[in-house]
Structures are given as C-alpha cells and as structure tokens.
Length: 213
Image 1 (cartoon, rainbow, N blue to C red):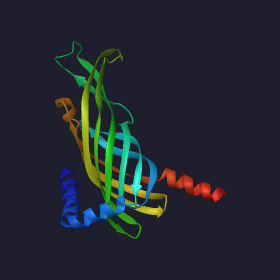
Image 2: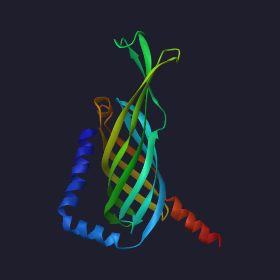
Image 3: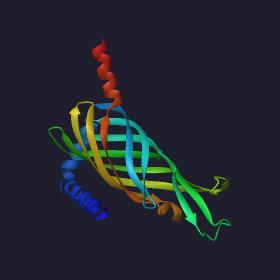
Image 4: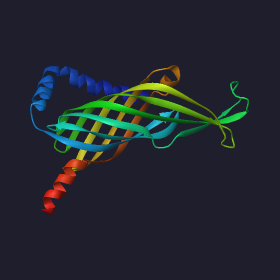
C-alpha cells in the first residue's frame, strides 16, 4: 500500500511542479475572487501500530473560487484503540491493556489542481498540534497509569471529488501522516485513506433557505 501511495503522490506533485507558473497564477487569481464559508466532516481510516482505526474531524474555513481552501479543524479517534500487552518488564502484572487515543487541532490548505466536468483532484496539506495518550489498565480494567505525549501531525495526500449535485458528492482520498514529536509519537506515523459522501453544509443550508422563501 505504501508503494502505491508514494507513486500516486509523486505523480500528483510532478504535475503540480511541472506547471508551477500556472499553479501560482491560478492560486493568485482565486484569492482575488469571491469565497464561500464551508463546514464539513473528515472521516479517515488510519492505522495505530498496524491496527486499523478511524480518525474523525470537524473542519471549517474559506473556499476561494472552488480552487483553494483554507481551513481549521479538530480531530480525534472515533474510539480508543485497545491492545493487550504481555510480559512487559515495566509492569508488575503479566498482562495489561493499553488504550491509545489522540486529539489535535490542525490548520490546512487544499489546492484543486485538476478539474473536468464533475471530477476534481486536489492536494491537501495539514499541520496539527495536540497530544497522544496511552492509558494502561489491568485485565479487570483497574487503572495503572497514563502516559501523554505531545505530537504535531504533518499530513499530505491526494483527494478526488465527484459532484453528484452542487452541495453533495463522493469523495475519496489517500495520504500519509507523519507524527512529529517524541519517539512514541513518531511510532504512530501511518498512511490513511477515506471514501464516502461529501456534504457542504453551509452552501446546502443556504440553498434550502432560498427554496423555502
């Protein structure tokens, strides 16, 4: 999966870099145009120490000419990832449970580098700041200790969006998250992917509001 991801990212970045002048002009032109406020949800499948889990986010920001988006969001695991540890020398118990969770704030920008009919391709880049937390409990769920680490996730990838109607579409994407921080935080760096419905809440609300009038 990692090889496929790297090839996909390299191809997208090559196209963007190859037409750098056009990209800069496109971004500059979009930022001089009109913008819309948007609110949305991010739902990503990711991996915690090789175990699949989900990362959820609530984001909001500005969309300039449907070309450049600036946004902020808050993210966290949908559920704490639980792992059984055995024969660890740093515990008096033979077996303990470790649950892993994270929460962070992120700033991002997304550039649409390809558009044709209802299909668009974009490259997102995000940088976050937050924590990763380990909770250790006995097999009877008695608390042993909690460890917390600072983390700064750097994420990039490629997204594809197919518009069904102006406010609703199908969105799929893949990318990689590099966790910058202590060793334990860096161990949780991993690829991610997502697929599902994309709903632009603010434009949809405005459209429904105009129809009701």
